[in-house]
Image (cartoon, rainbow, N blue to C red; front, side):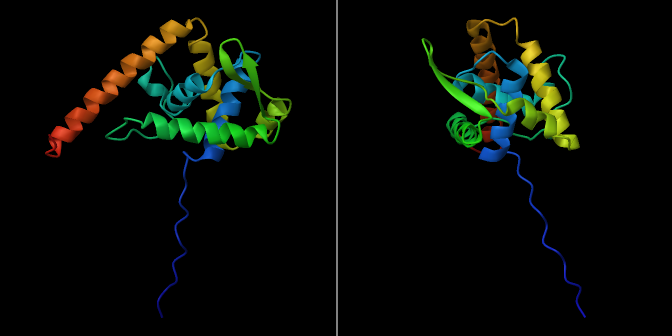
Amino acid sequence: MDAIESPRRQVTFNGPLEAGIRAVALLGAAYPIAFDLQRLTALDYLLVRTKTIQGGPESLHPPTPLRSPDAEVRRGIVQKGLKLMMSRDLVEREAQETGLMYIAGENAAAFLDALQSPYLLKVKDRARWLIEHFSGYSDAEFNELIRRYLEDWIIEFQEFERSIGGS
């Protein structure tokens, strides 16, 4: 008789729920500082790839041959994650002079305290490290750093494309 294999459980770390949890961790670590969607999207990417930052702790996700993120896709997922977290009072959205900003919500601290799995403890740890690491950066300095990362990702993508015979 053939053995019945249980279906493999596919684990994803890049859906709206996961991005929302990472956003709560980032905003909780930064409280009372608020961030716009652009900054949260960049921080979300860096949170799972902290090893790419000089002196950064081990990345949460394994390296991939092609790291180039589709910025619009990631931004949309982070935005959906923020919306989900706002529905639970874990994130609040505020209109400020600089635009729409996100800040840790009323329930964020209790929620973060409840997260105790090894992976989620690492998420919180990396979020604290990232916020501390970039605390002295002005918006312009942070944006310049992200621009340099994007240039590296574009070069990496072009090299990958050439290696598979692309133009």
